[in-house]
Length: 264
Ligand SMILES: O=C(O)c1ccccc1NCC(=O)[C@H](O)[C@H](O)COP(=O)(O)O
Image 1 (cartoon, rainbow, N blue to C red):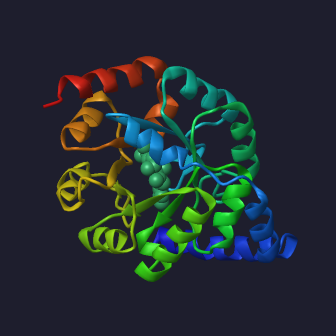
Image 2 (cartoon, rainbow, N blue to C red):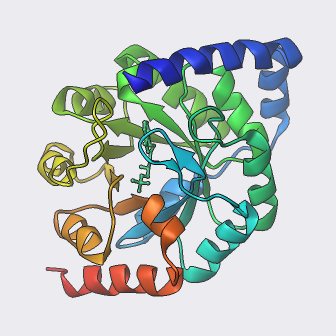
């Protein structure tokens, strides 16, 4: 499965990174930074519905999404269009992301930023803190409950939020047991890349209301977004459709207005 391939490649990447900067060094450096203030989850808590816009050059399911990829300009456009948070993919092989892209965007926008990578080692959490991230992604199918708990605790000590991603009820229970405060449900089946928004809609009911719920992937238009808001999503993570939207401001405005109209 693609996720295993990505995770295996990520293990090699992290081993290489550790040869340049050791675990001890990243830990020490990260601990010297001011503690984070959980800006990512504070933003999600404060809003009725938040839109997390993703900066995404390519993906395993779609190949190249943006040929020229002016990533700083895209992130600024998201900010000006009314995005609440920004997600930046840093995985280099399948998503053509990088830590440098993340750092450049960090310098140019004020919104809370999610470092979207395939976390398989605590090293990446300290690295995310050094990159200026506000949140990291933890994927349940890559981490058992004990490891999830440990990584959430490391993030807590650094003031970083965690988006814990689940695909099914077993993974949701693992995320809850690990103490996740934000759970994302991915609508994309990572075995065959099919997208089914009803995955978020069905699994919403299994997540307690005091845990923030993010619907992820495959949101192609305003109607998709509104149906997820109606099913109780606190936030939507939108990549490809946001990258392609010619009028990003109108896209976000219509989602938020549509979501508000469907309240109660
Ligand atoms: O996007 C993929 O093809 C993909 C494949 C394998 C693992 C993860 C993948 N995507 C990561 C994401 O979480 C999405 O980029 C994100 O949810 C936005 O999705 P979309 O709106 O469909 O671009």
